[in-house]
Image (cartoon, rainbow, N blue to C red; front, side):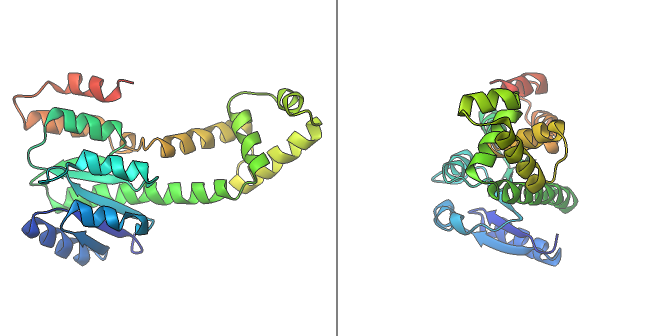
Length: 234
């Protein structure tokens, strides 16, 4: 994706510069940050489609803490964590918060590129979906949410004290703007929006792959099944 921007956040100058050079050769636009503070200061300028390559272990703040700050800002750009020595709880917390993938250093560029491309497609899809949703009027959004929750047109009309034809009109306009033609499709779009807002993007690449790799390279941690249960727990 040639119009994508990759944000590298790593205090290791050698790692940061190597990634920058390699990704520039892959024709990505790169913005590299030597400190998490500098990155967070500029976080509101993050462009879409984009991906954040985030080092998990930095002197003053962890990658999970940075991830939490981005969530507070309402920034849902996919995050690929990079780490050479993370604790099990960190991978659990990062995946629960919606990290797209978790790469253990050293990793090969082929794996990195595959992760980036899949994350970019996800980010681009989310961007299009959010743009369509934001084009809805407040009443259309309200109707969309209520229909997705399982309410019938008659119920919504009675609740709002309006005619059913008004609700049908809101429904028709919302579906047209979202590019959908059935109630089932409406429900699926609603689920995608909820997933995006909750940052639950890790399922696309495979959280099990991340955990299996992490466990196989760290003999003193819990087996993959236990870590996976911890990640998926509510």
